[in-house]
Amino acid sequence: MIALFLSPVYLLVNFYILRWILKWMGACTHYFKKKWFRVVFIAAYAFVSTSLLTAFLIKEPVIIHRFLKTVSNLYLGTFLYILLTVAVVDLVRIIMRHLKCVNQDKLRSRRTFVLTGTICAVVIISLSVYGSLHARHIYKTSYEVTVDKSGGSDQSLKIALVADMHLGYSIGSWHMKQMVDKINAMEPDIVCIAGDIFDNEFEAIKNPDEIARTLSQIKSKYGVYACWGNHDIEEPILAGFTFGSQKKIGADTQMVDFLKASGITLLTDQTVLINDNFYLTGREDYSVTKKDKETRKTPSQLTEELDKSKPVIFIDHQPKALQEAADAGVDLYLCGHTHDGQMFPGNLTIGLLWENPYGYLKKDNMHNIVTSGVGVWGPNMRVGTKSEVVEINVSFDK
Image 1 (tube, rainbow, N blue to C red):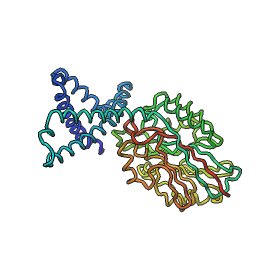
Image 2: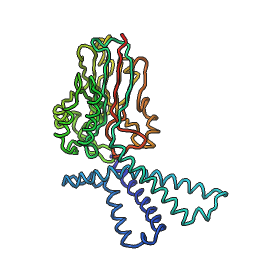
Image 3: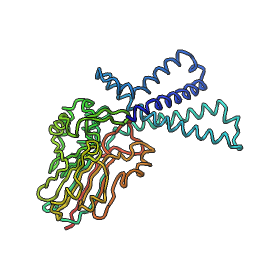
Image 4: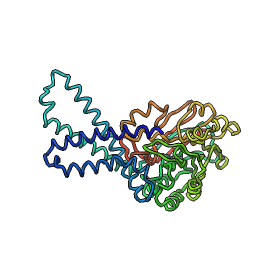
């Protein structure tokens, strides 16, 4: 419900931004001061800025709902950079007004105002365009790890790790084809998907049958395994905030059937022994079990009956309780969820929330790898981070 309380604040901030844009445009040329232009511009800005709310309220017809969601996802990223830029400029302006060494006449001049606004516009547009284009490209990141156990007949293991596909309005067939091509080019032994396959709304997926066929073309020696993430559940969502759902994770049969059609094996606090060489465990998502007022099994409960002379690999959506997993005898802990902050400056602050927000971390004898994910959440942009598939080359040292 917090999104509903923040809605008036969001609208007021947009009004403040619109006021400054109109003032700057009017200072640039008298043409932008004409009444008809201002009416058209205000109407266009109102439509785009409120698309976040109208997309949430208008569900039918589907084509209108999808269009509004697409617009809102693009605008949300731009809005964040407009807000950040305006805040910084306003702060600098206030400080400079109190500095005696600054020529106040020049500071308040039309020329300074136009120049400052132009620079801001170029920065905002450049970041938005770059972020939108950059998010469409999937990169490959590689890691080398050594596990001090015998892998049986597997002297080494190549794992393809992906997460946070967020299939929906922003991510679809084109992205999945690109992802599958990159995975198959690795020639992996096993593929692990660390949650958030969906983006809260299964109906948001365009051509789900086509995407399922694409995912079923993933090639690996031991198959494709996945765990649930916090967005793999049907519930209303507004600007990233979810509203309570009566459904439990996995209760939506469309999601479960989609995974089956894609050839993906779902592990929910379950363990499989692969080729009698190593264990693979997929965990329930922490947030969803908490929302369902349930508890998921602890790492020690999941490993207590395992032969710990064999390598133990966990897939868990969120990189939580790493020490607990290391103490339970987990050798390789694979996660997603963080998106590495997705957009600057989030990539600089995400480390405040997670022990390992992205990349590699060794915890005692356990190797933890967190991927930034394939897709996007909310704004259809990435700035300062990348969409990726991860190649993990595991060597067994006994």
